[in-house]
Length: 230
Length: 346
Ligand SMILES: Nc1ncnc2c1ncn2[C@@H]1O[C@H](COP(=O)(O)OP(=O)(O)OP(=O)(O)O)[C@@H](O)[C@H]1O
Ligand SMILES: [Mg+2]
Image (cartoon, rainbow over all chains, first blue to last red; front, side):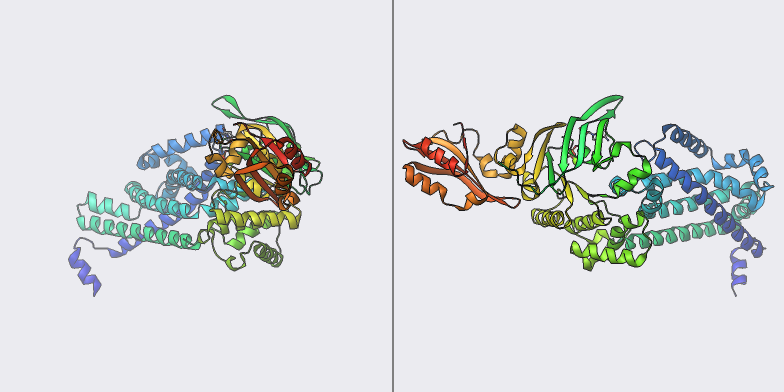
């Protein structure tokens, strides 16, 4: 029923299974890289925040070094970062291609970005609340764990959402240089073989994916705001 | 005049303490060197204008600010000599409340109050719940345990702050402008609660404010802070009835608007000698004035006056113009009856 309709609409798409596989690959790359980005970027963001001047553990030199590294990584366009990182990628996962080959550059590209978002979310936490916790005898670790992170929850959810959406874009770009997924299809068939309906379908799928991520993020953020009684 | 005080030995001692902040490579003094003892069980007020150094001073007590020099003792513990874990342990014995309450917005009222208990390592949830219920009952918020701070009024939030500050049974409570964000009625009820806590839990309270009225209602002693210096220190009744420093006078006038309104030379056209009489305690309720005036045949004209309380002490203050041959005899008789008299310039 659906298949004939799709074939009439998109005559050039002859392998729908391939398209499905590409979707799955994109989701796998996204899921894997997002998890690792949060795992790496969250501590980095916390460290950036804590070591800044006037914060809980001011360490100007460490802070400057971290900030520099983060800025360097953020100023390299992702596609170039991916090429530059190829030897590193090979060393880390044993291949430069496919989903596995895509994940290291995705994480290295997104983690500094996410860390900055974490840092600014933490900076939004009222200093008075931190001070009150210090007055109650809280250690720095207790403040991070029980005050900063929970109080910044809304901002952190937004940071994950924005990062996930940026990663969708990165995975599509990565497709062009051998990472697979929807970007790969769009590039090979849509661009190199002039099958514009491939382009259309992949773009539509990416739009839907981004919308879903944003909706999920908004829902989580609203739920967290409701929990604060707002 | 004996200070009205139920206080014991010093629990907080500042020994030759000073504090400077480093601003743009230069040390800018916030507090000039001072020494000060705060006694066990008293309510000690610190009043001063914005930027005078009040917050700096109170934050030296729990070492949220480290002194640039000198020592801060709590009981016989030198706070400045402690390492981090020992300092954290000491801080748990000192409660603190703030102008903007500083509650955890992502936690319920009950969890906010339980927070210092959990920080201190409490794990027995039943015991925590019981203690939280007891604290919320003390501040009159039993019904709000499961709400979030954003759902409470300012006065209620400050009550949560107080419950939280009391959780670990501290011996000292620090209040940094705890009522400055509240309306007058709510301020009164929060001050009543602080006075009650001081009385019933024998807690030493250090309270910062820029309103003399707050000092008058709850404090036993007060220090007036002006540009980093303690310019006046004493029992509230003494400071309030006989302010000496210009800054103190201004604070007292703010609390007594009718005096401020009288202006610079209000009595220029009033004949006779202008005197301010202060009555304290029992003297407020005896008809001494009319008796002395009748006996000495002096005429009096009341120019201004009020009867109120300084904490629990009733007091009255009257500004009179006295005329007659025996004014000096009248004044001597009044002084003999325990009334304090100041002659005002005209
Ligand atoms: N962290 C800081 N760095 C530099 N200067 C500071 C710092 N904290 C306070 N100061 C300065 O120290 C002085 C005293 O400040 P403090 O906060 O103790 O005043 P305050 O009496 O509490 O005023 P307010 O009523 O406005 O709260 C001010 O001149 C202020 O600018
Ligand atoms: Mg202040």
